[in-house]
Length: 194
Image (cartoon, rainbow, N blue to C red; front, side, top):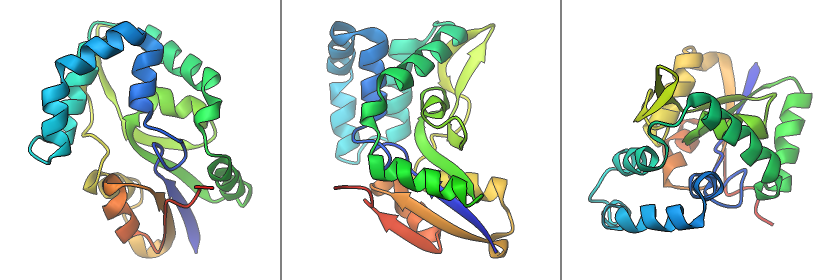
C-alpha cells in the first residue's frame, strides 16, 4: 500500500512560528513591532477564541505585504529559508529525508505561506496557504483557504480522494493539526522535540 507522510511545518518541523520570523526578516524589527501593536486587540481576541485565526492572519499579512511585487516576495522567501536553517528541528529533517529515501510521497501541510516553506524543502510538495497576486503585486489576500484544522484534511483529500488506497502517517504539534492527526492511520504529536 502506498504511504503518504504529511508534516505540519510551524512548531513540528521548526522550533517556532515562521510567520512572525518571516515578517521580522522581511520588514525589520521596527515595522514588526508597529504592526503587531496595531493588531494586538485582534490577536488577543483570536487567542481567546472570539475572532477567527484566518481573518487575523490575513489582516496582518496584508498590513505587511500588500502591494509588494510577487517576485520580491518570492525572493524574500528563498533568502529567509537560506538564512534560517537553524529553525528546523534536526529529527524532523531526518524523518523527511527518510520518507523521501523510501520513495514515499511527502507533503508539508501548513497554514504558512508556500513561498517561504517550499525553499526549506525543495524536494517535497508543500500544501500551504497561497497568496493572491494581481498584475504582479500581492493583493494582501489569500488565494486559498488558510490551511489550518479541517482544511489540512481537505487539501490531502483533494490530492488523494481514495482514502483506502494509502496509509497516511501524520506529524503535528498544535490545535491546527488535530483533524489531520485524527484522519491519519498513524499520528505523531510533537514527535521531534529533544
